[in-house]
Image (cartoon, rainbow over all chains, first blue to last red; front, side):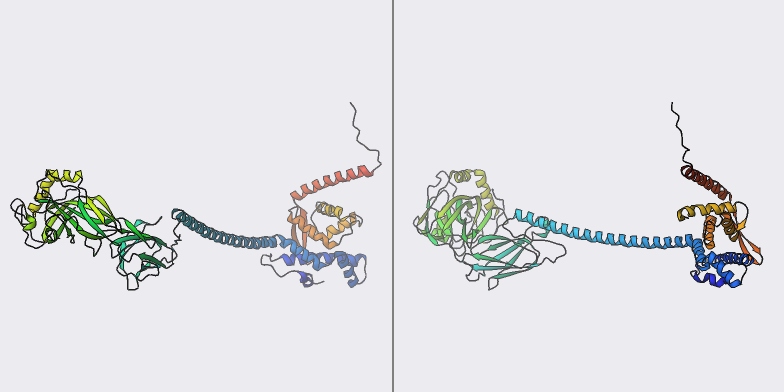
Length: 454
Length: 115
């Protein structure tokens, strides 16, 4: 057997294989076979071929023996390499598994966070629902656009009634739970178009308050919640007419008889009070009824003949608190000359407050008989209100209402309070009157100085 | 012979043969065959994996020499091989003694004196 035949079953040369390994294996096997052949030829004789055959039979397959010896020599190196490769593969597998697990955990964490956020939102909605059970709850998330379209529709008397146009809307966003106050609080006014609609535009969701003032100076408020991304139309029904007009006469129980202050007078005006329900809402009267001749009762203190009821003119604004100034058409008062208890006035039914004030009547260029010496022009009556809402009258529909002005003790006390009266006089004097408050004049439209009492 | 008994004995026999002086593979195989009267009817080639295993275990060491124009690999015992051979011999003799004690005349027995 030749050397190259012995190596036929050896694996390809390994990179870590020693240079002499294959040759050493071949040389050792060939030496054994040569020794065996020599001995076989010496002892057994015969031809060489049969001797070789016997030698090989005793030795076994040299190629297989060479293969075993090669693997035995290379075993540790091959195994080391395989272990290294296996370790690398295992490490990669572990890394891949770890990356996969981290990704899965991250995904789970995101799912959990989203679930937690949903739970928090639901909890928030429940809390808001508990606080405002009658209101619709809503959800706020930073990622969602929040604008909603808000419109207000106003009809007269009923929901199917004609469109209301002469109303003024004030829309105000209220601070919400968890919202800074700066997000609300800014009121905006809107007018109604001919169809009775007010387009308030896009707004953030939240709780809103709409205050509507009618042409009758009645006010009602509507609160509602606009959810996120849901347009909202708030429908408001307003009263279409004044309460029924009712006949009223004024009476006075008694006048203080211990006062002799002809320059001062007592003024009483009426203001509607309370509310009426229209369209499911309470409409609260504010200010005087429009287009109604409101009575202004003038009492000339110190002269019971000098009483009269005039139509209340529009009061001009005064820079001084508690002071109203009127251009009073005194003609309406003096034409009677004295109190006319049978004069009938017509007022919308309802409740009224009687508001009393001290009036400086010295602006009229008269002294004791100023009612009769007016030049016919309007005169200024400057009044400092003693107290408002002192008397309350109920004007009932369907009957003649007799409103008795009860001059209570406190009015008398106030008028007896010389210091206050002096202040009123001084106020009149500083307003340009001359002669210690007698005989001076003040032109319409001028304003006085001084301060209010209360 | 049972292969389980043979595998333990072959290495001891080879160490014993090598312990008598530097020798090579063919000579070892012939010595084992001669001394055992052909009892171990082994393929001669199977001797070499065992020899190389003893070399890897540092029980024998090898060296190459030129003989009649051929390279020949000689083996000799290391000090570790000498100790290993002694241990294996003692172990084998104890084993054989035990076996012989059981398979012998059957009268030898340990007598425990009574006190």
